[in-house]
Structure formats: structure tokens, C-alpha cells
Length: 381
Image (cartoon, rainbow, N blue to C red):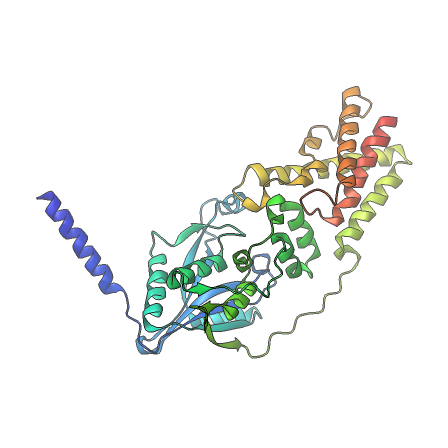
């Protein structure tokens, strides 16, 4: 009897769910929305969403996989550790458009070439993803984000009939190099990201990997073919028609990390002519370098961020500096420690271009300062 009741419950649940799935009309339209990069850090690389428009059903909404909740418990800690849950959000298209226009972020809408069955299948996939038990996912910067989720669900809709055209891609480019153009006007963000990203970011991107960036996904959708000849995209419109003008970027001296780091290195060298000044500089220098190393080590070992693993910048920014930065260099083992740290920094500089990870050029003056301070001054002391 219990088994019969359970079977009846499951049958009725399935019937109710199937009845709740909206059937799109023949005039329905599904589009890929590509949003231009914004000024805030989280919007630096642009954004993607799917728009479903069906006037017959009074439906015009966007499916957005790039949403996170600031009210999540321990939000900052989860974000830093790579454990923050992102989720699929559904919002009216008008609100989506208005928000982006207020932020002066232009949009490109690509209308997908779907037959009635494919529209319904893609819509059903989106609705299934939007269910409470399915909508949350653990974000990965390169491999599971607001763009890759859309790529995957479109591939699922077309099964094996969709082919991506990679002929226009600069194959051989690394994941890190794909990011660089987006940070040209944010030099300190660029410097910080290049410090934090590890060897995993220097893997050469496959054709599908390019689509972790919304702009590349837009290009790949434009050239994709169904069954070898039918274009995936049948039309495109821009909102607004003319893109917003980009402000001219004129960094001053302190807007150039390489210049600032070179100045720090020169101050460090100059401090060696005065014992008291040298003591103050060295204490601050080794402390800051140790803090930087600790952050890099935590990003590697204490987070789920796949892009920050195996970071060779730890060769010159050692977190162990935090254990000794205030100690007198006259102590024998302290002197040996700094000699070893200086030698490691020097070797890193020598093999800077050979190390399989792309090292930030702006960090070279700091690594050189660590080498000089460790090998020469502390040895003389």
C-alpha cells in the first residue's frame, strides 16, 4: 500500500511540474545578451545573459548566471576562499537593460536561430536550472561562470549538431593573456591579478576556453554553425546603437606600478647609506613582502580558486619574512636566513623569463631589492 501511495505521489508531482512549464509560442525569440565591461572590479570582463522574449505569453525576461547574494553568511570569507555560491537569477528584461544603461554599459543582442522545438527545449533547460535546488553553483573564474554556463546549456540544446569556428581565434594564447586587454586602464588591478594568478592561468586556452570571456563568446556565437552550414545567430542589435564613449586614460606617476616599484627599490638602495634609515626601511620592506607572500600562500593552499594554485611568485615573496622582519641581522641564523632569501630572489630574477608562469614585470624591482638586501647588506652585517 505504501509503495502504491509513493508511486501515485511521484506521478502527480511529475504531472504538476509538466503542467507548470510554459509552452512558448511560435513567435518567441531567444537571444544571447553580451554586456560591455564596467568600472567596478566584478564587471571588468563584461557579462552574459540569455533573454527570452515571447509577446504572446507576455514574457520578456533575462536569465543571469552571474548573481551572488551579499547577505550570504560569511560573505567576504566565502568570496575570498572561492566558496561563494553564485546562482541563476531571473529578472525582467527592462530592469536588466535599465541597470546596464545606468552604468553606461552597452549591450549586444544576438538572436539565436532556433526552431520551435529547440526554443522550447532551451527554455525548459533554463527553467529547470532556475529551480531552487538547481540554481546555485560554485563559481570558477575560468571554467564555470556566467558565460560558460550559457555556452554549456546552448550546446546541450543542440546536442552534437553545433560546431564552433575557431579560425579567428589566436590559439596558443594563455588564459592570463586573454585577460590583459581588459585591465589596460586599471594598472594596479592588473598588477594585483598577475601576482595572485598562479601557473594554472598560463595554460594555453582551447577554443572553448575562450568563451569564459563574454566578448569571445559573442564572437564564437556569431561564427558558429548548426549542422555545418546554418548560422547559429540570425540577427544582432546594439543597445544603445552607439557605444558609450570610453574616458581617456592618462595614468600619472603613481598610476604606473613599475615606476612606483622602481622608486621603492631606489629608496631601499639609498637607505643603505644610513643605518637608522636602513633599519626603518628594512623592517617595513620585509614585513610588506611577508604579508604579500602570506596572501599568495593562502590563495594557493586555503582557497578553492583553481586559478591561484602553484604560484611561483612565492619564490621571491616568502611568507616566512613575517617571522623575522623585526629581528636584528646580527644574529647568525637570521643572517643566514636573509642570505638564503636573497639567493632565492636572485635565482628567480635570473630565470624570470624561463619560469613557466608569466611573472609581473612590475615586481622585478622588488625582487631585485630582496636579492640585494639579502645577499649583500645582511652578509656584510
